[in-house]
Image (tube, rainbow, N blue to C red; front, top):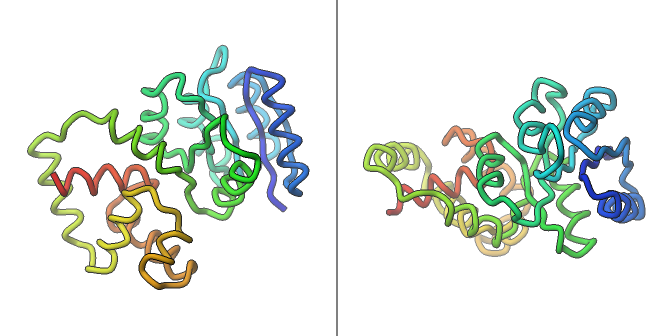
Length: 213
């Protein structure tokens, strides 16, 4: 059973998210309204997913993402964002957050995101991917060379999957595009991330963009 720690400084948001998840059969192990309490709850409960707002008093959500692997290596970060601080979203990507969900999303999308992250996948909506890529400064020549060299290590089908990841497509959407099973696409994505040395799909999308430009 999937267990989640929810952290947001707005009590109404926390209770709304709790209701959505529990209605879907997902266990909310604990809730917190600041980063320090969130980190303590993660250390105590070792959930599969930490659902984190980035803007919280004291220790912010970004700091929690950065410390998550030390506190609970099996717990993966799913960022709950309203894009209030886009720079923090980019920093969370670089820190290895497994997914991003907007506070304006419908309940079904939130449940899908939590389940995907708990299963070891990433959840990144196209709007988040486009926003993050728009925040990244134009690539330098050395960075482009590095990206080209890393992408060149991929087989043709792996490069095809990478390009679709860079478009922000989910595994299910990629499966429909390339006529594979979703399980096969998941294997390809994992292989691509490992070969590129990327922690998540947004990092891979950034690398793909640098290699193209």
